[in-house]
Length: 223
Image (cartoon, rainbow, N blue to C red; front, side, top):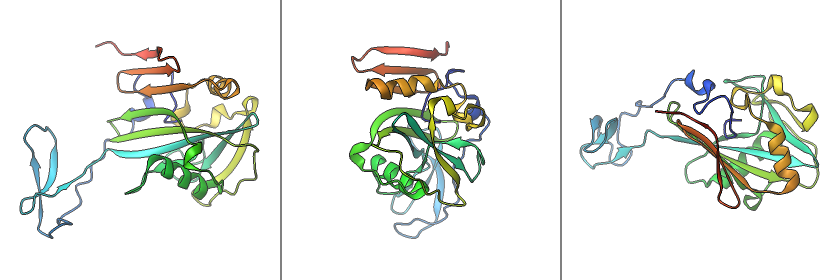
């Protein structure tokens, strides 16, 4: 899961295979209508789209995505992706945060859209943050627990299937790339015990922060 850690290195191998994407397709200023120009602003190293008339700046990211790890009675909810990348692979529900939307509201919306499960923002417990500058993305993962594994309604064709999995039935071999190498048993154990853990992944490190503010490095790249 992209917001859950891998133990194969600080920079996930699946991220390195995807190109960095910057959208320079906008041509006119949405504020005043004048043409936009590419410029490197003082103190910055990358080009920005700028309106020389009114000074409007076009944001080039990073894009923000949310994932939700949902548990119920020793089960985890997974969807089978119906779109690329990782079409046909199992993953947690999630997607892009929309304009004017909080992280929690985006997570609630994505779960409802993809599997028809109603959740609230209050149920979203922060679980992990992953910074992926190569993909120009930031992923935020939440953990949610519901009382019973209710029937799911996958939203075709975006979601091919949706199921509740016991730990012993977790589809390790058919999970999407971001989940490769992750110890799912540790996550099930966290839910059983109620302990708090927060995962943080950057280009250089993968670490977990516990409730007593102890930091445990799972991987670290030497420079």
